[in-house]
Length: 383
Image 1 (cartoon, rainbow, N blue to C red):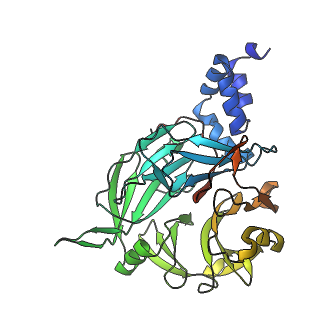
Image 2 (cartoon, one colour):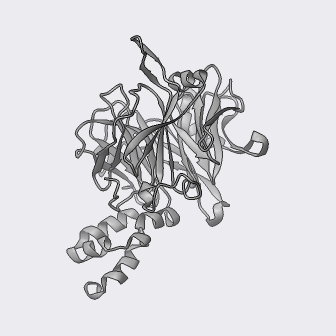
Image 3 (cartoon, rainbow, N blue to C red):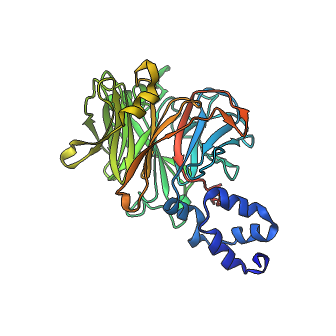
């Protein structure tokens, strides 16, 4: 019966599958593979995954030269919910910079001068982006993507994978008389033109702090691209994209936090930070640029996470509109606050075991950088 169904009906059925089930269906036979490939662009399976299924946790090695990464499927209720994804289609090891619309923004781990590329580990596609106009080392990088561009004049086209912009701020560049200097400019990558252009400047103090004191993760919210800095005490630096104006925001308990990370939750700028005394707290930025505490990690999960050490200083965090993950290394368990009901109204806490083995084969422990993304099995015209 299934072999007799027309392609459009099969495509509609496959449209509602989770990413792993969609991949299995696509690999089942030639007929189903063609049905998956015939899905029209306005019925992009990746876009529906964002509505129906929670994002996957992707872990990329920080200091390992292995061409592989690891993925956790949150909707798989069996013990086989970790996967190793080969990156052997790449010519060199990479480091994660950011992600957008199911794609990874990466840089070669062997280069000090920033050179960016875009990668889809699930479709095994990679594209190196053009060289920046100004050669920079250690700048801050941020990405603005759909739906952020959908209501602004910065829309680059009708292809959803072309509706994004990559921003590079600060860094060190060559000085006119030799040596190096801090670079107080902002560059943007335009995917329609496949080119970089300088779009603004910044105060020299901001260029220094973005170069020296930021871990490089960024969050875009309400027209402003934010970075966290950690010079003596945590603070936020933001660039209003439309006006190219810069601002600085204070952080609650800025001089006491052992770690602090920005995420975007339900469209709000959200801060996750922890101390020995209070554990991990979650704040949202409200009216008047005031922070409001909205949640704390349950004490039993917090103790399980930090163990006898009792310190949050090595804690890492990644978040999206549907989940916030606290993690450390590949083997360590993760504390997760995740949306479980419709309408962003109900969130619950979970414990997820780390990845110490896959299908009975032990995995070497390593330091990782995590992200939350929906696996994208749709070929993109960006490549």
